[in-house]
Length: 248
Ligand code: PGA
Image 1 (cartoon, rainbow, N blue to C red):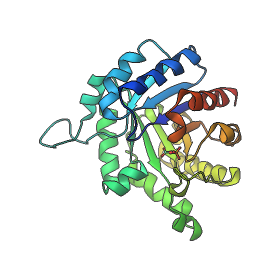
Image 2: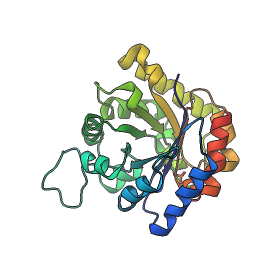
Image 3: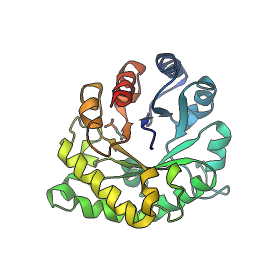
Image 4: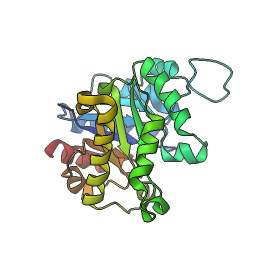
């Protein structure tokens, strides 16, 4: 069956001194029943991978370019990130889609490149508040999944994170029923493309996951873990989320 995944997205936070959080986290979870992933900023990927070598913590990147190399100033290829020690990559986060105008097609091209480089990819989807209010949430998720996920993706290395944009960094979260509805829709939609292998695809919830609400979110059917922003920065916050996932 699917191994659960507690993934932390540090976004544009973290410098050398923050690597100590990884050491604390590793010490608190020496042999974890769930997969633990931290995606620090690219500047820390190499040192984070070294600091967590031999521990239960994997290190990921927050983006990669679709090309293997080339004249793309400021960008990083999947091969470079793999060379630095990353094994996972977050793609199509709503902040990338907004700040860098990433379309579903761009996200899919990046996912192809990352999967071809042996990465596990976490593809993010989610509706705006206007889309939820208009009743188009499930249609939005279908469109994003159809456009962002490569057909030939290996299901064991494919993770989809449902992140309602209005829940990211706001302290707002959907109700358990709303999360359940979205995840059931995602699983059903993926089944039409991947058949029985859909069972191997992990579905995460993301958006204002905290120690206080983690257990309730993990109790929702078809939630295989979380993508956590703010509460992943400190080991003292992320650790109880990992523990809640392991107990779910
Ligand atoms: P948040 O971010 O946990 O700070 O809401 C989640 C995310 O953007 O992945």
